[in-house]
Image 1 (cartoon, helix red, strand yellow):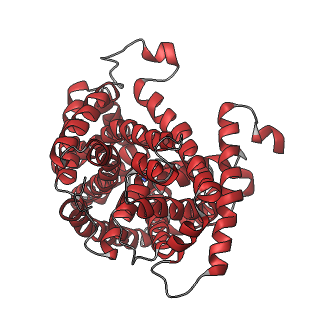
Image 2: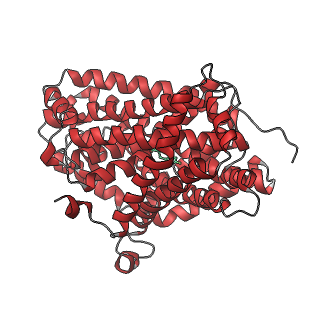
Image 3: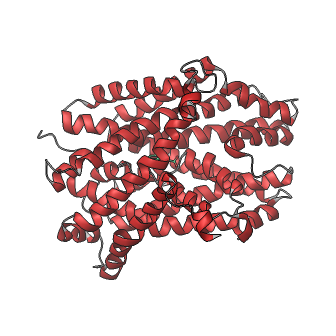
Length: 461
Ligand code: PFF
């Protein structure tokens, strides 16, 4: 394969694309509701801590592995550790995780598409809060509607990925990311004028020590992985399209700050509304879909517009993340099997759509009605649980161990410092310490808690 590897058009293009991957449903849909469930301030503080001590070090490691090998996950480990080494299974785990996560991520993104479309018809007009909330349940159980929007979303993702690294992923992120941040800033400014703003600031930023269970610490750490797109080689793959002149630690820092900024902005849009209208911050996964339209309906005529913009934004954010999930799967077939981008994208995207069908039908139990009875969770929740609680932390653990303990030290240092004017040796030593010790131990603890071998709540009680 002597084909020249595609590269980002500019360093800024890489940062936008990587930030686009990080900022997604995890920030806007998930972070506010888990913050609500975990009592706010202290959870937010711990999450910020996890981003800094585990997330950023592992993100630097992923980008470095990708850039030094110029390969997607499977090829990267084969190239660096040797063709016959077992490390390539970490790459395989990543490809597999991307496949599984996108299959249900697309279903949630489909809900956002559905709500964007519903906003056009002012669906909440003249309805009581209970009626508006119940629309989510109606949609969740509607097989055809879920399938339709899942298909539409997968077509959008395939369309972007097919166009390639520079003209597809980079171009779209260049347009979508700045719009996304701008709209959020505007919404957050509008929220300042709501009477519940003070309570929201208090809730999100003031640590309430009795509101957080110790296991919330582990939830914060797990979410740090998901939200920064770590543990499955998405950042590794994006790093493989990066030229040597880029400063990786600085890029990782910027991406993480952007991602965290959007998550906090999302809270500062949602919580003022929740407190102003006296709703509970603990509304759970339905928070965005059930609660916000109730508030939009009370804003008057302008509410329809805000609702449309908000859900469109959610779709944009989901799209740029979904693109990175598909890219991990697709690039395996391009790099390792020599497929054309066209063929690889269509076949893998089509297969992910098919695998997502039972997730799209999970709410109606139209397919595998016995699934929940047999496995304890419906199809959608089973794979969400497997991917976020097992595959990403395991992948992250192996990536940290590889980059910290196994990778050629000279190559690692050269990659860390390349593109920077300073030698950065103190920063390098600090990074290595976090990568070798702090990150693996922290992730290992999550895994032990998930397996049930330790119960942090009981230990600290
Ligand atoms: N970071 C994305 C979000 O917060 O929605 C989800 C995600 C994308 C996870 C890409 C993992 C990944 F590789």
